[in-house]
Length: 127
Image 1 (cartoon, rainbow, N blue to C red):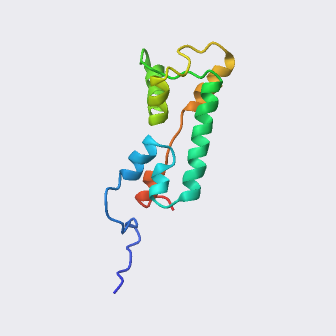
Image 2 (image 1 turned 90 degrees about the horizontal axis):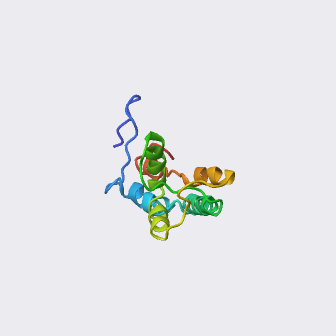
Image 3 (image 1 turned 120 degrees about the vertical axis):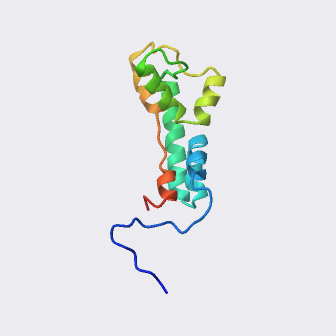
């Protein structure tokens, strides 16, 4: 017997398990959260987009934030940390300008910041 869904009650995802795994995986490796959910095309597109934008940002001498000296630097650092392993590997390899030297570097800094929506897919907020 199927129970009707109450109008104001959100749809529940019937999948069990650690619901934050796609979120964590997607943070560490772009597209990995979507791959775990079987969304291969979306994951591949997301991975390619983020890696390309990150690479373009570095190529344009974009700044990777390493420390927080003021509120804007803290926000930049939080955005950079959203890139997971891309950010960590880039910092270890000393990639990314410490100070923006050319005007295109500011565009490069903007390209480096990225987001992942795999958690919303896993929890059923997004189809």
